[in-house]
Image: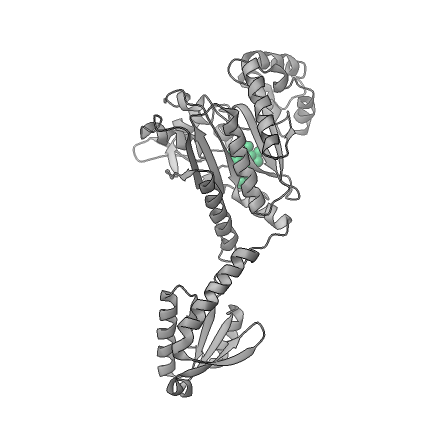
Length: 422
Ligand code: ATP
Ligand code: MG
């Protein structure tokens, strides 16, 4: 995926905000390879999921081994913890990642074949306090990005204790519709009937609307867990709706599942999806370690920010542009600019050899906040005209005072942007 220079400021802003919120919640970053053995995803994500059956980018290497570009992050994180012996670290283990993922899907608004996720995982806690905490993290990030009213949908899909009875109830219900279900769902009836609840075909959706609900088949422990989660969310003042249609597309979920849905961004409106996956670490060869997490799609966050009218300005705008005339002045401009940059100030000058007029045009184009005119006379006098572009006011300044002036100006601007969110 190409992300062009005018688009990167909003990406950087989201990444910075995500890191900041994750840090406040006690999460550390983890990084891991772009591809893993295909087996990891087949087992970790689930053989019967759409991701594994239709969406993976799989290739064989020179030794004939099968690898897959990561379609998501969770399986890799779990693999990494097991491989690096981290499953006996002090718990809870709180991790986040910012990664690109690959899925062979039909590209459309909010869906691409390479996409980016901000994800979090917490290991070593089965308590609903943890589910409430990661939901709170997602909620905090969404509001800091200005996507205030993304709505939270939660559900519980039970555990291995309550799942078998529920599967039977589902099978019983859907068998009456064998002729009407889509072809894929007909085979899901045997392999994984819960997947039918996630089918996008309108016919299957209509049938699924009347299907038995997971929350009516929870075992007492799962029911208590779900009730406690609702109490904690209410305590944290995070509004939610129980949405029994949410089952999530990956096989490893148990108990809590949730999504944040954004308004006004089209059909692909789930900006964040997550839940609990208490069986995954063991499934992938580690100890029985409960866990939960979520992943957000960055492109969808951007669409949601746009829909909410949030604008992120590029910080590539220089504070000062020095327009110069003559060899000596050009060299002096380079010298001043280099000194300012070393002091942390964004400054620029002609590096193309443009005429003075063309330099002034360029300064306008890059929206420099100040311009300084430097020619032989100015060099001789050690003073030059400094123009503030916002209102075209011009003052004279000694070249030796530039560093001090712009240090103060940069400090003032950074303070203003912190307090006014500019
Ligand atoms: P969807 O139902 O939208 O396909 P999913 O259940 O496949 O979502 P997850 O695997 O839970 O999605 O991924 C978490 C988040 O990553 C999604 O909520 C979405 O924001 C984002 N995402 C998933 N697939 C894509 C994609 N192909 N392009 C862009 N973003 C994506
Ligand atoms: Mg999908």
